[in-house]
Amino acid sequence: MHQPRYNIYTTIHKALRFSMCETLTALGRVDDRDEKALLLALEATERLLQHCRNHLAHEDQFIHPLLGKLCGGESFTTADDHAQHELEIDELQVQIDEIKTASVQQRALLVLHFYREFSLFVAENLIHMRNEEIDNNQVLWANFTDSQIQVIEQAIVDSIPPEENMETLLVMLPNITHRERVELLSGMQQGAPTEVFAFLLSQLKPKLFVADWIKLTTALHLTNETSDVL
Ligand SMILES: [Fe+2]
Image 1 (cartoon, helix red, strand yellow):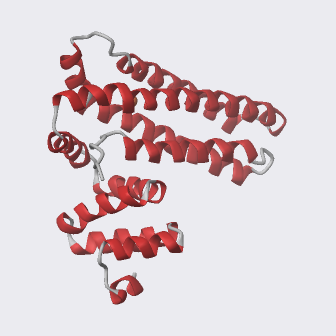
Image 2 (cartoon, helix red, strand yellow):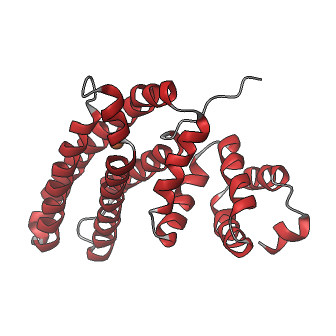
Image 3 (cartoon, rainbow, N blue to C red):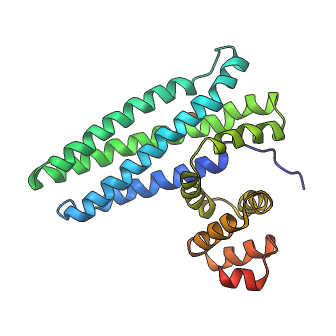
């Protein structure tokens, strides 16, 4: 069967889509009179916004300069989207701070308003990510081989602290297809230190459905003893 070419955006964007949708729906059901639950939901949102900032910075540093040169400044709109998203993240943070200091009586309306504004941010990001995966990716595919694209991706991964990489992988891996999971983990199985790979699998196991875990361990040729220990 024809093997699809490598799209640098697909798996990290799947992780972001999962986190955005999860955060949004959690904000939709949070009890604004429950201090602890509200604070947890707001802190989770702040962590997601920080991930979004980091993701924008990675693309700005490693991908957009290449696209800028290749497109000669023409029809390259996702760079403008990034500047807009930075402003929106700042504004969402201001609203989070307002909710944290608001009285109990004010909170219900503020949380509902924030939920709606955050939903627009998610919607814009969904459109933006789709455009990157289709339009920007077309430019990358026209100018680079898959191996060259994977070198760019590795430069991004190398620039991120190991703990942050682990955190991202544990959101990404349960939310991508079996084929994508096996591809990603096969590379790590060969390249990463044994203890790091074993730790990753031990953290991943409870996040996967049993059937997916069995398919994964079979595909990676992990022995029964190894997968039992994990
Ligand atoms: Fe982007």
